[in-house]
Length: 238
Image 1 (cartoon, rainbow, N blue to C red):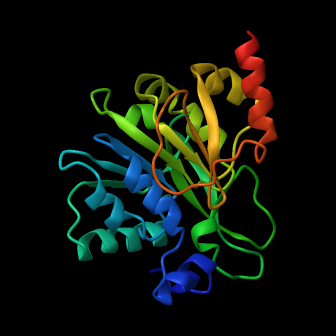
Image 2 (cartoon, rainbow, N blue to C red):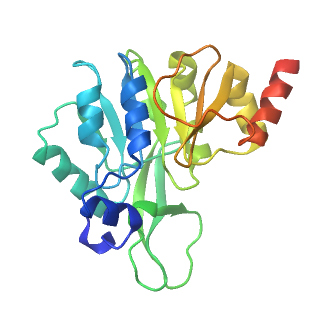
Image 3 (cartoon, rainbow, N blue to C red):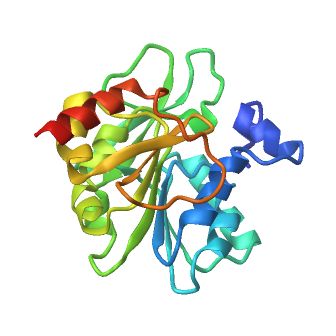
């Protein structure tokens, strides 16, 4: 675990012996099926041991963590647990290959930890590092079947999804998104593929192709995501 961010909520919960977002982990384990998982926003790798053991023996966890310190700790998590089916990359998922600034410390000097955020413009007194961007479609081979796409990327979901459109169309994975992009883009590129909002697990929104049977514990609500409902109705009306 990164010593600099042990004060962060997720880190402090794990240090106390509890599990951060246990229902999210359980939901992913229950619904991963025979496919691979894309897990972006890996932090220090606390999801990795459970996911590694939940997937089929030939499946792969494609993990992305741009923060250098967090990435180093995630590699240690993999080593300590003897995980052999993780493909961990020190990069963020983006719309295209390139670089971007990642805010790793706030203006007061405290580490951002698991909420390190990609920014387009620097802010005074905050600390940044330049990180690599990779489009998921260029990383995940076309012969891999993705069953779950989970993004915890601090508001960078639009760019991450834009670089994964080909994989999404090909595999139609269950999607677990911490935040959902703007209405028009999401309608034209995701809901238009017959995706539906199915509910929430912790603060994450779950989207799945119509008719997909989901198992496990999650909040099966529709009224909790009115924007998605409006988009779904518009798509169905076309």
